[in-house]
Length: 293
Ligand SMILES: O=C(O)CCC(=O)C(=O)O
Ligand SMILES: [Fe+2]
Image (cartoon, rainbow, N blue to C red; front, side, top):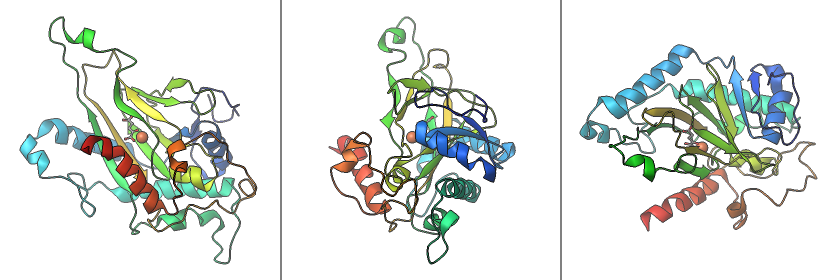
């Protein structure tokens, strides 16, 4: 699909959008109908992206286990990769501005308008922002064995989830496997790797702020028969609002008066969450509890 085509609710394709400030309507459509889009001309250089993938490779298959353990992350320290987070954060701020424009967020006393989201994602703010480098190791087939154990297209490498933050930048390279669940048809759709494009998706916070207009779409990673003998890497930058930022609906003509559809992120409705930090804690507890117990 080209970026000039508008799409209806059950169109399966993830739009590819040339990023510029004028593209805000196209991004808005993508966020409403599918929750994902590819951005081209995003301003992050190929060298930078290739460097990130080289670091990923070096970390996962170039150094010993012992050395890997020395780079465990914590709140203040970003581990092996002191990746230039700023470049990713900057791009996220541009996307958030574009979304604020598309939603015609009203200027308030501080004149926030198009900066409504970006102001809530200040670079130094304590937030859940993080980089994650994912490594999916190859499945080695011992003669005549593993093929029976793996149910291709069903066995899962990363379980179905929505992202907890505002938006996510996902860098993919060469090897696919990601699938998203179409918010309207509920069909699982494969997400191809588009060279030189960054995949962007809406996270839960955006879904809260827009009362479900923007979709925090479920996604997962499956085994892929063709590629299972290869290492798969992906790199995600999860952009979160500051922990104290509220999740009330935004002042936009598209959102005020909107009634949230019953569908969506069910478990989130079990308990009222007020801030981005509370939502993050809730999701982390629920993600890791089953493992800890
Ligand atoms: O590896 C991928 O392609 C997706 C990873 C993902 O969805 C996540 O880490 O939240
Ligand atoms: Fe994800």
